[in-house]
Amino acid sequence: MLIDNHNRQINYLRLAVTDRCNLRCNYCMPAEGIDFVKNDKLLTIDELIQVGRILVGQGIDKIRITGGEPFVRKDLMVLLRALSQMKGLNDISVTTNATLIGPHIDELKQLGIKNVNVSLDSINRETFERITRRKQFDTVHNNLIRLITEGFNVRINFIVLDGQNVQDMIPILEVMKHHKVSVRFLEEMPFNGGSKKFTDIKWNHRAILEHITKAFPNFEKLESPATSTSVNFKIRGHAGTFGIIPSFSRTFCGSCNRLRVTATGDVITCLYGKPKANLRQVIRGNNSTGDIEQAILKAVGSRAKTGFDAQEEHAVTVFENSMTSIGG
Image (cartoon, rainbow, N blue to C red; front, side, top):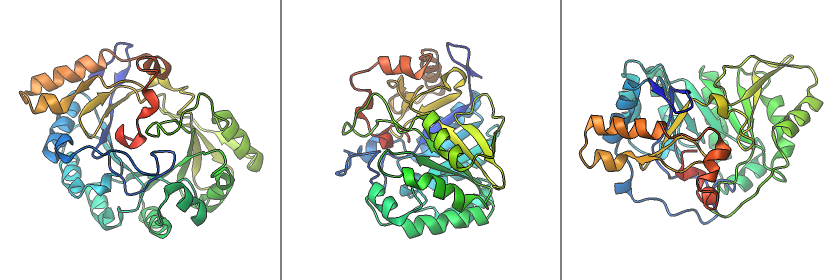
């Protein structure tokens, strides 16, 4: 069991498999992209499996595969097949932009991997293409509908961007009200490869809730697990739910149960914090299971209490990374 220095149990791993993405969302990276790491700096599939197996042995029972865009990686299904066989791993999920998942939907279902988060910041073609800087709307829409109709547990992650997609918040709830889908609205975060910085946001979790409940006054707050990052609600007459994730306000730090390992092997104990270790270096050094376990334990044992404390570890450079390089 992994227990951090603030007595929080860590049982949830966000495992990034690549820093590459086939979209260029304007809140995630600059238009020209970022300097993606060379392939030899990425963890191989065998190394990712090794990291997963060790962490499951240490008490991780939920792994979410992230990127970049995970399905950019051609050998991703090899990893997912291996993870699906690990005893003690109860929940495997994937976060994707849904552009490349189509050919893999059948096998994902066969493997029992049915929890899929789809990053979708607009249901309007023009807005979608402006934000993503790519023309993939039809592909995303078709794959999303297929995931829903084939019984996947779909959560839509919608980052609220002032001046860009606020007008689509109510319409996406209207479109999804007949489906058992959770639409989750996230506060914007200033990770964008250094091209955007801010110290405050207009659309914080309170403003988002006020905007939604003006349109849908008949709603109720739902009970959520203590470790949930989202505050969840049900609108009367809607088959699904909606949630709000205060990712910038960071109101959920006290119960955080998450650990991140980036595609290059960095261990990140908080999205806003510095890497605490690099597992790639350990694996390619001695490749000792004991050394890898100790590196993880040391990282977890020096965890910041809150995201604000973590930010202070490198306050000058914290937002110079792109979200795609730190695991989405």
